[in-house]
Structures are given as C-alpha cells and as structure tokens.
Image (tube, rainbow, N blue to C red; front, side, top):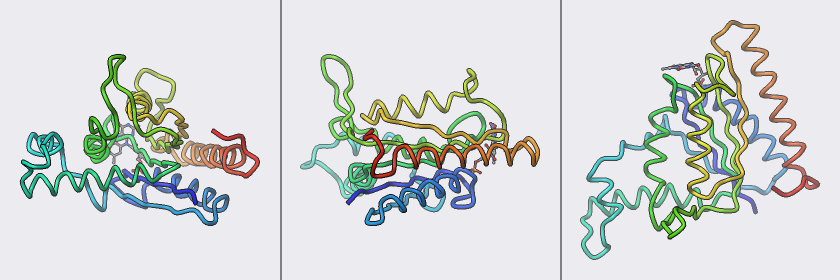
Length: 210
Ligand SMILES: Cc1cc2nc3c(=O)[nH]c(=O)nc-3n(C[C@H](O)[C@H](O)[C@H](O)COP(=O)(O)O)c2cc1C
C-alpha cells in the first residue's frame, strides 16, 4: 500500500490556490491508488513553532539527560519525520508570500532537518536519508517569477528536499494569479493540465517508475 503525505502551507488552509491544486493532484493519485493512504498536514491549522535555541538543544540532547520539555519537542519533531518516512509521495502546496516561502513552511523545514535522522554528515559532505520518494510541488503566485532570478522559492525548496535525499521533485506553477481574471484562469487551466499530464505519465500502472 502506497502512502502520500500532503502538506498545505497556505495561510488560507484548504481554500488556498496552492492547496486546491495539491488537492486536484491528490484526487488523481487516489484514483490511481485506490488502496493508498493519504496523510494530511495543514500548517495553517496546526502551525509548527519557530525553531528556538531551546528547541534546537532538544534535538541535540542525549536521551539520559533529556528534560520532559525536551522530550516533548523531540517527540513533536519525530512525529513530523515519521510521516515523511512513511510517505512514498510528498505533495506540497506552496504559496509565495513576500518573495519567499510561508514562514510556517520554514518552521516545518527547521523541525524535519535533523542530523543523524533525516541527513548525516560524511567525509564527502552531507547525505540525505529520506531516499526513494517523489515530491510534487504546487506553487501559487500573484506575479510571474518562474525561470527568473526572482524565483528564490524553487531553488530553495528543491535544494532543501535534495539535502534530505528527496531528489525526484517536480514543480507545477500557477502564476499571475493577481494579474486579472483572464491571467488567473489561464494559470489555473495550465496547472490543471500539468496535473493531468503527470497523472497520465507517472501515476498509471503503466507509467515508467520514477
Ligand atoms: C501575505 C501575502 C504576501 C504575498 N506576497 C506575494 C509575493 O511576494 N509575490 C507574489 O507573486 N504574490 C504574492 N502574494 C500573492 C500570493 O502568492 C497568491 O495569492 C497565491 O495564490 C497564494 O497562494 P495561496 O492562495 O495558496 O495562499 C502574496 C499574498 C499574500 C496573502
């Protein structure tokens, strides 16, 4: 049985454009994987706290010296990581806010990057430990950035996931959503077409394995 983890990071929760595109993809995935399991993580409904020195210290603490507070912090981070480990496919709804990723997503990333757990340091540099997964990112933006130096989101998210070992990453963009009704429709239609193409190419039983 395959497992998909859907992470929504829109501040509008399920009503965000990025969440809706992610939902459309998940619907296709469910059709292709009727026995599959979907785990939902909504960073608007359940925000991950900012990483503080205290929380980071909990990540480094030795089991025998851990305080109850550190236990709780570690348990929370472990639960997020367990969801990721269980997932064959990761779906991320990714809005652009103020030229970057939502701060809730950054806080989530800060809680899943754990040395010795999701990546390790080696003599040849860091190695990601979350291998064998595919990720699909649904990026919603008010303006137009894809393929330009202003698109800091794509490289950041791609590099971060690769750092954790998730190298099979595909982006679907809906851009210009604040540039009038016509452009919005064009962007959403195009993103919808990309979702159907991915479903056909990658989700059917005859698709070439990623
Ligand atoms: C607080 C805020 C900041 C935004 N900043 C940007 C921005 O820097 N660039 C941009 O193109 N669009 C920006 N937008 C527009 C969003 O990218 C657009 O509304 C998109 O649909 C957001 O995704 P969501 O609907 O999934 O939340 C911003 C929207 C909000 C609410």
